[in-house]
Length: 256
Image (cartoon, rainbow, N blue to C red; front, top):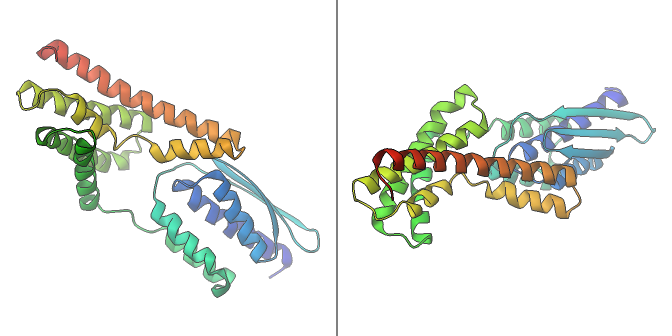
């Protein structure tokens, strides 16, 4: 393999590792650190710039030859388990050849997400547990549990449709309001606030918000402000979905 081909392979693998971090909720500085670290280990000096939607990197070998690569990022989620596995691999890079490292990264990238049953249980119990954090009663526990279950079902069956994230959050907010209002209308709960807020906590982008602050403090203003804008848009979607549906229900069935 020629030097240039080997450099391109190193750059490709390094950016692929960075892609795993970025697509699964990692901070931008961590993406750049991973790319540079892999390049350095295999003898390639890499300069990397990452934003939420792309990774740009150039590598210089010992002969001064330069290779470059741009990778587009089209989807993001929060899966910290993949980042954890990736970090363990990078701590033991000396155990892998370049080809073996690529195979391990592909395994991490293709790791299956939690199945529907796990997500269903997690969403349901997660939403219901927030009731006690907000000092609610057992009666509030039930609508929050049902809201979490319905959100899980909606996300599962809508994922093949590749729906817009803004629309998904509007529907999620509406589900929380509708379920809670139904319980209030049947006089099973005294107010809807706690059960709605508890279920909405599933959709609140807490990790993205913290990462945006971290990026801004670290000087990555483009990524930090972009991520903050994304957080604000999600917040607006949740407010629109929960607020409008609750207002319509109050108009049709009576006030709260």
